[in-house]
Every structure is written in structure tokens, then in C-alpha cells.
Length: 301
Image (cartoon, rainbow, N blue to C red; front, side):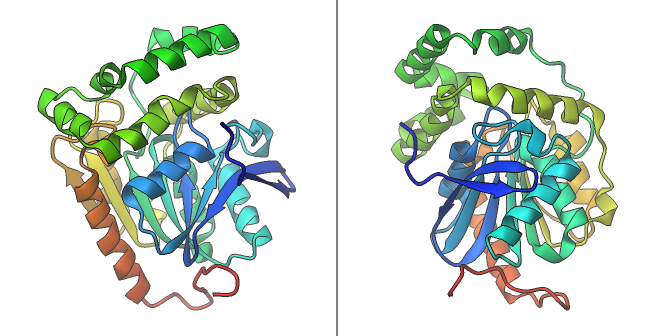
């Protein structure tokens, strides 16, 4: 069921679909592959806090935001700057997960005065070396067939344990996660939710894959407070190649290396991650702003 609170913002680059919730300092949420505003919002619900305003965007190529709005990380970063301009927001904290990382990095690079802080969760620090699974190529074709999507959605919905086991190799961690009712409700939002409007998530995912395999980043030029969160056993975005590199090359970056965590560490070790994010956000609130920067608050607060 479509969220009735979804809005479409008209920008110079085209429409941008977004969800705007809460009040307080503004956090921009950037989802990963097969995502959209709905999965961006899960970031707020897993590792965020209630006393913030959250902007959950569908990035270009996902759901209601066409790829023409920004096919490169640089274009996407500029799009985010225009979005917050149009919403009369001076500055944001950015949360990015997985494929949302490249555009988040470029937002910090290109719009330093608009980025109060950066939280990178399981994101790329350079070119990905992983081969794309053959099944993904098949799925991109089958996603155009409603009957296939309905069948896959029902399968995921009826057997979340099997779905979870594909994301978590450690049986003990998997069982602990399954027993957490609140966490599993959020995991279901991602695992099952990705089948909603699935065909509208493919173009953005293909673009993210292309970016992941071709781009490197001037990480040493990032000059905003940064928290890197990465599982030490992430099979999709390996810790040594990405998480550790981000923390080493971004000046002053803080690192939470989640021992045994994989790509879904926001679910499996959510309390540990949320606790560290909370400390980081508190540090940002007490950190002096650079000259000319303004605190991003909801209008009227």
C-alpha cells in the first residue's frame, strides 16, 4: 500500500519523490540498491532517533524519481542541494547506506557548507570488485512481469527466515535476529517491500552497479565530521577494501567496525549501531559550525 504522505518536489532536474517526517535537526536519508524512499525511511527507524526531522528520498532511477534527475554521484549530490534549497533547509546531516554512499560522499565534497555531518553505513570506499550475480540479470527482465513479482513477494513474505539466511551466514546471529520481533518487522519492510513497484527500482539499481564498478573518490578531501559503520564480515562491500579505507582516508573519520557484522548490520547489530550513531549526533550538536554555516532545523523551530 502506497504511503499517503509521499510528496513530489519539482526541481530543475525533474521530479523528486520524498517522505518528510518528524521535527528538529534535519537528516537526509539515502537508500541503497533496490531501494526508494520507503527503504531510506528504514534507516531512520533502525539507527535514528525520534527528535529529528527525516527527509527520505527516492534517489534517481528509483520509484518516482527518474534517472534523468541525476545519473552520476555528482549530479545526485547537486540534486540533493537543490532539494534542500527548495525546502528552505540550510544544512543537513546525511545518513547513507550501501549504494547511497557515492552520492553522499560527493554531497560532502561539493556542498561542504550544507553538510553538517556524514554517517556512512556499509558503503563503498572505492571500486567494487564483486561480480554481479547471474540471477540479478534474470531478475531485471522478470521484474517487468507482475505475475513473477507477485509470486516472489509472496514467497519472501511467507518465509522471512529463508530470506534472512541469505543475508546472514552466522546461524547464531540469524537466530537472534529472528527472535527480535521489532527488528524483523523492519527487515520485512526491506525484504518484502522491495517487490512493491519492483520494476521502478531496476533502472536505479543498474546505475548504482555501474557506478560501483567504475568510480573512485577523493576521500582525503572530505572535510565534514564523518562516522563510518561497517561489518567486519560484509561479503558484498568488504570491510578491508571499503569500511577501513573510508575511515583511514577521510580526515578525522570515526569508525565503528561491527565485529562479525555483514551487509545487514543495521538489523543484526542494530542496538550497537544505534548507540554509536546517537553519540555521534550528540557530538555534532555541540560542535561549533564553520563560519557561514547554519543549523538545519525544521521551518519554524
